[in-house]
Amino acid sequence: MTGRIPEEFINEVRRNVNIVDIISQYVALEKKGKDYLGLCPFHQEKTPSFTVNEEKQFFKCFGCGKGGNVFKFLMEQEKLTFPESVSRVANFAHIPMPAGYGETTRVLNPLMQVQQAAADFYHRVLLTTKVGQRGLAYAKSRALSEEIIDHFQIGYAPKGEQILLSYLTGQNFSEELLAKSGLFVESQAGKLFDRFRDRLMFPLANESGQIIGFSGRRLSADKTEAKYMNSPETELFSKSKVLFHFSEARQAAKTENHLVLYEGYMDVIAGYKAGVKAGIASMGTSLTDNQVYLLRRVTPNIIINYDGDDPGVHAEERAVKMFNQAGGFNIGIVVLPEKLDPDEFVQKYGPQKYLLQIQGALTPTDFFLRQLKQKYNLDNNREKLMYVDEALAGVAQLTNPVEQDLYVDKLAQQLGVSRESLKASLLHQRRKTKRSQQHIAAQPSVEIPLEGQATIKTDSVQDRLLYLFMHSDQARDYLMKQNFLFPSAEYARIEELWLNYSENHENPTTNGFIDFIPSELQGIIVNVEMAGMLADFSEKELDEQIHALAIRKVTHEIEQQLQALAEAKSQQDVEAMVKITNRILELKRLQG
Image 1 (cartoon, helix red, strand yellow):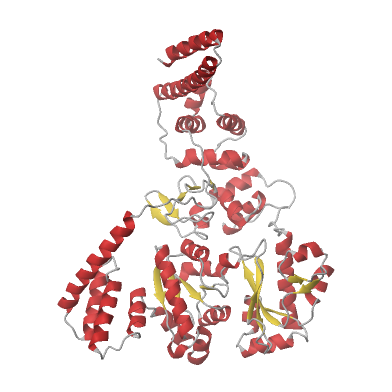
Image 2 (cartoon, rainbow, N blue to C red; image 1 turned 30 degrees about the horizontal axis):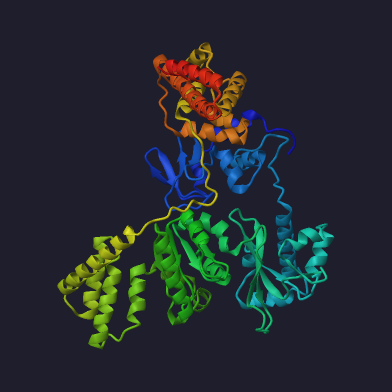
C-alpha cells in the first residue's frame, strides 16, 4: 500500500462497524446500562473496568487508562499501524479497500518472521521430503490426517545438527537474530546448533495467531531426552502466558459457549477431530494465573478435561482450585472412564461418545464429592461420619441455597440418612464457615497496584468546557468571544487541533478527530466522551466554569507566594516580605 488512505473511506469504514462487535472478539462483554463491561485485555484486573460505549463508539479502561475508537483498539491489541487497523476493520465489514490500496500485508517483526519461516520449513519437511517420512509415519500412527496436519501446521525437525540453521541463514536471517529466536542452542565457542531435532513440531501462536514458539514431541525411544520440549523464554514467547490453539478457540467459544481445557496438544487435536473446536492446552506445565486471566477474558464457562489417570485427576483438582480463587467462572469437569486421556477415549469410543462426556461435565461440587468418596470406606460408620463432615463442609461453601439443598438431597439418598439431620449439620458447618470468613476479612489488606496501571490526570472543569467547545458551535463562539484559553497545555493543544479539524471537515466528529491527533492527547478526548455529559448548557454555566478556573489560578499563585514569603522571612529580607505580602492581599481580594 502506498500513500494515505482517503479520509472519506476511513469514515465509511468507521460508520459501518460497531465497536462492540470488534472488541467482543477479544473480550467477553456484558451489557450494563448503556455501556458494555469486560476484563481489560491490556492489564490484569479482578473487577471489570474495561468499558465500551456503543453510542459514542469508544472504549476506555478505567484501570490502566487506555482508550480510543475501534482503530485504536486494534492498534493496541494487535500492534498494528493505523493503515493496517483500517484495513482489518474494513475486511471485517466486507468493505473492499480503495483501488490502488488493496489489503495491507502486515510486515511481521524480524523474530516473528524467523518463527514463521521455521514453521513453514518444518511443515514442508514433514510432508514433502524423504527425511520427513519418519515424522509422517508417527503422525499417521497417532491418526493425524493430512488435513489435521495442515490445519495445525504440524511439522518435523530433522535429526541433523544445523539443518534449520542452514535453511534460515540461506533466507538471509542474521546469526545474531537467530540466536535470539529460541530455535538454536549456542556452544561455548559461540556456534549455533538446531535446538529441535528428530521431533514432531507443534507451532505455538499468540492471541493473534502469529507463531511465537514451538513444542517438539520426541520420536526416538531415548528416554533421557524430554518427551516434549518447548521453546525457551524469548522476547516473543513466555510459556506461562501462552495457550495452545487459543487464537482459534476463542472464536469457536462464541458458538460452543465454553472453552475446553486440556493437558496436551494431542488432546486438543483429538477434541478438534471429535467436534470440539474450542479446545486449548497449557504448555505442559501447571496452569498459571496469566493463563486463567486469558480464559476469563473470553468466557466464564470452562470445561476441564485432563487425563483420566490419577495424576490427571489431581491436576484437575488443582485447576478447579485456581479457578475458584480467581472467581467468576462456571466450571465443568470431565473425568474419562478407564483412566483414558481424551485422545485415547476418542480413538476407542469415537467422537459421539466423547461429546456426550463433554456435555455431561460434572459441577465442581460433584467432582469434589466424587474425589472425597474415594478416600473413605462408606461401609464403615466411623469413616462414613468423617465423609459426611467433610462433604458438608464443602457444601457449606456454596452461596446458592438451591444448590445446597440439591446436594443435601443427594447425600441423604447416597448415605441413607435423613435430610433433616444433614440440614442441621449443614447449618453448623455454615456457622463455622462464616466465622472463618469473618476472621479472614478482619485481616489487614494490602492493595497491590496492577502491572502497567497508569494514572490519568483529569480535570472535570476543563473536560466540561472542552466537551462543549467540540460539540456546540454556540458554546465555542461564546468561549472565543470571552477570549478564553485553556490553562492546561494539553487542552489548549486539543482546542487548536479541533479548530483546524472542524474548519476542514463538513461534519466533524470526535470519533474521526481522534485519528488525527497525537496519542498522548487521545486519552483526554476519550475521558471527555465517556463521561456521559449533557449537551445542554447556559452562558451562566460557562461563566461559572471560567470563573472556577480563574479562582484556581489565583489560589495556586497564593500558595506560591506563601512559600516565597516563608523563604523571605528565613532570610530576613524585609523589602521582599513587604512586596510579597502586598501581592498576597491583592490576590485574596481577587479570590473574593
